[in-house]
Figure (cartoon, rainbow, N blue to C red):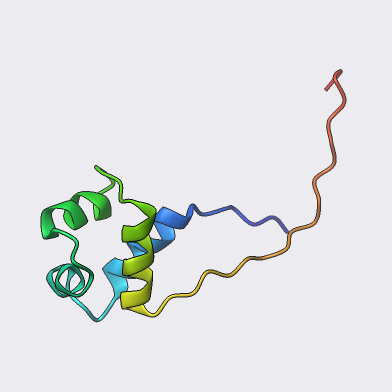
Length: 78
């Protein structure tokens, strides 16, 4: 069984979209301009790592990692 890796920013966008808080509320609580937050959610702009941290804190998110089985290295002939 293989797992498709989902980017951290995509996971954060999904968390914003499914949050009980509006984008306006998130912007107010994090100090991130609502227009900047809107561009981020739509994939048209990025945020600083500080901004990403503030959103994660606002939404009560924690970063966790999953350990995957190591991938076999390909030889030059493959």
